[in-house]
Image (cartoon, rainbow, N blue to C red; front, side, top):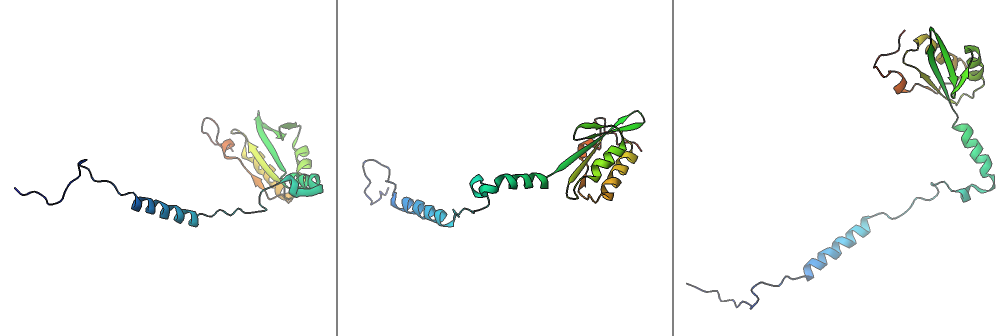
Length: 153
């Protein structure tokens, strides 16, 4: 039997050299520090101080620009009942008057119940188009009722 010529230490296990491992860790750390972008974009976050003295006027303008009107149509017997922003309206003529007073950039949401006839929804949509309101949307949740049935004609 042949024995190795190397002399082994008494501990039996070789020491792990930490210097190369530390060098690699520092190289990785410097790589990630140089590749990360730490710059912030200035001027995009809203700030009360940046608005200045006319902040109330600016807030009012923002509220007017983001105007949204929800018109809900509910079936009552063979007729339809209209609600504008959850306030009941007695007849369709008053709905027409309210739509005529809206600005063209106003968002109109027509929320028809599941059992409302299409003629009421189409008449309301046509009235919005006559008043030059092109931002008209229909929520998807109201198009199909809880039973899964589509609105009747």
